[in-house]
Amino acid sequence: MSDSKYPSLLKEIHNPPKRLYCKGNMDLLGERCLTIVGTRKATKYGTEVLNMLLQPYLIDLDICIVSGLAKGIDTMVHRRCLELGIPTIAVIAGGIENIYPLSNTDIYEEISYKGLVLAEHEGRVDMHKGMFPMRNRILAGLSETTIVIEADIQSGSLVTANLALEFNRDVYTIPGDITKDTSRGCNLLIKQGADVITCEDDLKQILGIEAEQLKLIVDKSL
Image (tube, rainbow, N blue to C red; front, side):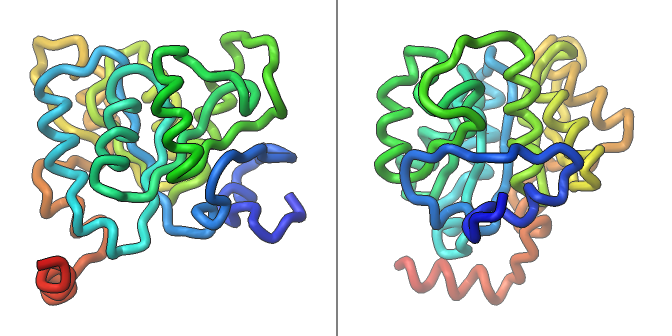
């Protein structure tokens, strides 16, 4: 925690990791971070929402997108960022060599080259369920804002959201179909008082982007 690159926001939580192990660009730890997480059983709706929110203009805002490299929404978050060139941090459970799921080995390697992979332990360690909530506190602690895109009642994304609230951070979620399990967690968060995102402009407002600033960014990219 004494290293100058240790994220200042993470120091503010009540149980910050004593050490962080990294693969990739450690300068990203100094960027403004936005955490986006969600269900492992992503639907077409979740994909559409994610693609709507993650747009090329984010590259010019010095914002780094954080997620957990899990199946579903997390994986889609990282892939979308890599496709667009948006900086991304993957926070993984266990050790820095514990790639989970193994099907994400390719994206793990790409993030370690183009972004940053982050873990609380060195090397490869024996995994247990308790390591995932430990990972989730880092996801919540790195950012001032956490967004949940699709989550059922038992989703680890709700753990991340509740930890973010415990850390006095902002939590936003996407309203969903009340008949779908993948929306039950998000709708519960709304019922409990979480703020709602219903369009791309909501995200721009969250990030504090003025219309004139966005026009300059878009014009610059043309």
